[in-house]
Length: 529
Image (cartoon, rainbow, N blue to C red; front, side, top):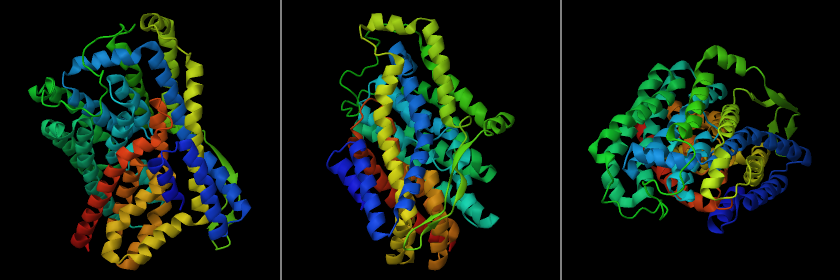
């Protein structure tokens, strides 16, 4: 009920994320209390944990919005638009480069919604309609979710399941095989959203080349080191953009693409408008600095270990429901390593850029040249971040209540109970999708359902590695409709309240990915069983 009602309210009735999320808390709590015999103490602990679970996401949203305000009020986005236009005269190529390739690269090194928060406003600055500017990077980075952030989803899976080394290796390879679907389908969906069939005809070679680098590269890298399975191919794809931009097919405008539903009517590749106070290099500096800091703090082992030292977490008591669902006590629940978290990288980047831009007088110059009254960095941040924070808190609280009351486990067990073995194999990635939708995290979906999926696979006589791989792929797919991702994108593009419209763009892709992954899972079962 909480999941169905949440979708109906946001997608069907057009409620804002704040309204739907707040309602979802009461529905989940009501179901927990009356159907799952969850006492008030358990609900209180679950709610407190949900609020704490939201902090790592808010730690990305607030710094990302700070960076957005800095760039917006200094003329940085206008400078970027002009600079990007000089890289290629082909608008489709630029959309693919920013919306897909750069987004995936960011996901390879940083997670927690960082790619969406960074890239969505860049696409808006380039001339894309905000709803598309959010939907495109959300879909684009899905292939890099499971092995992204330097393998955090993979490492979390190994922590919660008891499998031997051979099964773990087979799981990793089969998960990479299934994720190829996300890369190919994601690329073609991005091109379709931009310009429908004419864009598909113009962009299919580019999509196949990029998706081959990402998908096949991930499969190869899994054999070497799964931790780098998203980062390395994403980096190669980023480097491949330069030679691809020299290709005559993508260096000049695509005259055949007339209908561009993703772009605003005033979107163009010329240099009209007020002259920004900075050049392209200065406008790119924040993203270059962000990339250097994120890569360095992730790959330089002594630095990474030093930053991972300080951690904050809260102690919570053991709780139970009347139906026997128990949650153990914890001394340091979901410890937040605030120095190594991606939010710290974005915050440091934003503060450095703020100081540099202010010292050069960019804010005052842009206010004069553009003729726009600027609200100020701090006020602009508060005005945009507060509305974004409320639904995040609501969604994570609802997710925690569902978890602690046993609703999530009941969903998975219910699917398994009514589905014969091969039907369950087809539906297995759907459990991962549900987990990611409920928790707004592919990693949380892995923690929530991986062990249960292995148990169900054994009970139904299915290969454990294949079903676990399907869970991993589904956990990534579910991020396309994860409420926190949608809210984050809406907040950084200034369209708070239009989360339902964004979901209407991402749900069809999610359904297609679910069906394709289900069919591929059944095929893998037939091959490996």
